[in-house]
Length: 433
Ligand SMILES: *[C@@H]1O[C@H](CO)[C@@H](O)[C@H](O)[C@H]1NC(C)=O
Ligand SMILES: *[C@@H]1O[C@H](CO)[C@@H](O)[C@H](O)[C@H]1NC(C)=O
Ligand SMILES: *[C@@H]1O[C@H](CO)[C@@H](O)[C@H](O)[C@H]1NC(C)=O
Ligand SMILES: *[C@@H]1O[C@H](CO)[C@@H](O)[C@H](O)[C@H]1NC(C)=O
Ligand SMILES: *[C@@H]1O[C@H](CO)[C@@H](O)[C@H](O)[C@H]1NC(C)=O
Ligand SMILES: *[C@@H]1O[C@H](CO)[C@@H](O)[C@H](O)[C@H]1NC(C)=O
Image 1 (cartoon, rainbow, N blue to C red):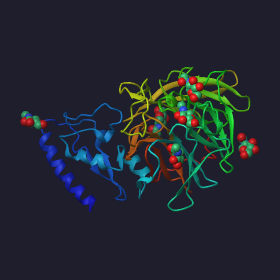
Image 2: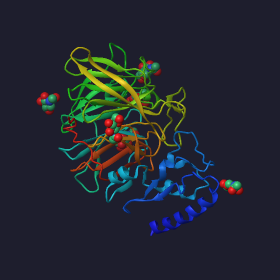
Image 3: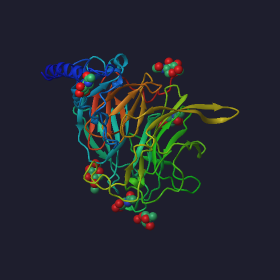
């Protein structure tokens, strides 16, 4: 029924645009049309919408998503705002969605704070999700996928850990990037940011690193583990911005490599404005890091109040700053040690700022849109294939389920579930040759 109505709208749209754009021969028209299976509201964009009727306008505020673009002279554009999936590359985009893609918006209810670090533990069939706030809260979420619908349980690790905000499963163990900095936590708990390892069955937590030669970290944002067991993490200043640290950073924002067996930490990358999400390609030869530089941490805790967040935060936006995904070659040689080279910008986020980043089984990359609603799917070289549109901001994503074809998108004020054909990598056998 809904699809039929949209079809009619589309017919009207193409006639209208033909008339309006009669003297602009190369305008893509209609720019949007329904496509693909009917199990979800899928909209294909012709030629990436590369030539729009020139009255188009998009507010530069990074929280205004791609679908917030106004294209008044092409009524077909209206399809974009209500789409579940937007497809740019019709072959690869529709293929990854599969025959019966499905989205369940705000599938699970959560507090109106940032949710992060979704980590699937196949042996338990549980999804661990962390909560960036409220300040002082030591609780995180464990979503039991063995029940239908899933059950959300809260948990506190032993010892309690404050504000993990990134992480990955490695060798059936959770590795968390911890951003909380607070020496007056409930129960006398004192903490500095760093890396913690958690046994998902016993919830026992073990600290691996919490300082750089006596300096505090600003607040680790995300991490990944390479096939040699080294932990690569980004250090940021969001902890201060979100009120889970009262300390200004003591070091530049940078990306580090930590070796658990020796305890040594070295800086590997210091050119990104705001290093954020981090992940390896399946062969371990490429490292992807997102730069959410358009977000800066400001002096006054006011942004977000009454808007997308339940309490004041200090995050400001400058749309002309970086919102890119960078790729690096990873080198490990007997003569020159471990280093990154060949930095290249492979993607500028369509909206928001690129946040959590994960690689699918086949090498495609899925990137959370940060404080904007959705996630983008790009190929290994950053070519945009499709996007998922949610009704809440998406900070990070994780595949779950027996075939790893159920994606959970976590962020602020809700968790969305997508079932599609794009499978995730086996978390315990991530690296392939
Ligand atoms: C060109 O298109 C505009 C509407 O977009 C219309 O007002 C104008 O009359 C057209 N000009 C010609 C020469 O067709
Ligand atoms: C802390 O987080 C838990 C889990 O979401 C929630 O149930 C609890 O209400 C929170 N406590 C406070 C004081 O916000
Ligand atoms: C994997 O974890 C087990 C215990 O959980 C440990 O004995 C083993 O050394 C770990 N392997 C690696 C490669 O870290
Ligand atoms: C530290 O924890 C206390 C709870 O004991 C909380 O009231 C305070 O807001 C927290 N501050 C920061 C910066 O995390
Ligand atoms: C941060 O909080 C601690 C404990 O609540 C306090 O001792 C310290 O002075 C605070 N630091 C700053 C920079 O406000
Ligand atoms: C990515 O670029 C490399 C180098 O040009 C090329 O070999 C590879 O096929 C490209 N991958 C895709 C998915 O297009």
